[in-house]
Amino acid sequence: MYVRQAANALQILEYFAGKGRPATAAEIADDLGWPRSSTFKLVGTLAAKGYLYEPQARGRHYPSPRWLELAQKVAHSDPLPADLQRLLSQLVQATGETVAISAPAGASAMFMEVAESRQAVRYIARVGDQVPIHASSAGRALLAQMSLEERQILYRRIDFLPYGQTTPTSPDQVEAELQAALTRGYHQSNAEYTPDLAGVAMPLADPSRRLSVVVVGPVSRCLDRRPELAAMLAQHIEALPHRA
Image 1 (cartoon, rainbow, N blue to C red):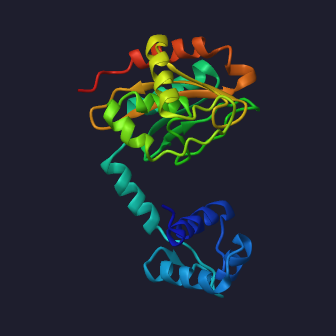
Image 2: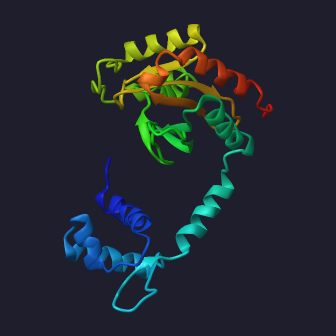
Image 3: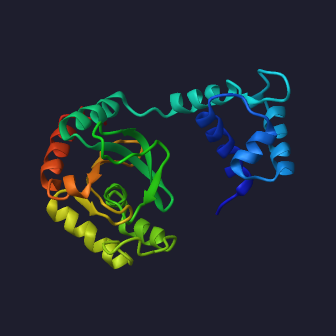
């Protein structure tokens, strides 16, 4: 389900994050290619609710601190443990590749925290980015934490599109990948969703939610290194403090 009005409200926030300065509703409409009438209504609604204010004259708006206040309250209620945040930085240094922690989001795996590689050619990802839960090592490390019944229900919501030649395109193929990962000791991917990317992932034990951690980078650098990357991943996960 996709609600355009909600998506547009969030896109305005992303717009200001990229622009970094106030803008009029007309500028927003022109830059985003939206109809001016609906843009003026949306900007007016957000301003009336206290999410936009006018720091300058001539109708130039900018996001108010209300967004940050709400985000801080949400994050405070469900924070990512400090040891998992440290895990990201440690793995980036050890592997030299981008590392992300993911959680289920419907038929996708959503990145909850990301630490990017410093290499010039790298996987660029942001918090909130999503990848198909069945067509990514990060996603299958989440599926592995679900019961077969849960997975079967989820499979009915998935469009098994062939994103690439290596994409699993049926529940049976996904289940075969999960069984292979169980034998191997880690989940792996090779250009299943994003071309030229290879990665390894493992589940993260957490009493309150399902999480996974993935190390991912260009195929040219990571495909043959997957066993090595998985060993480093396992070593760092093993060193995490136990959370009951």
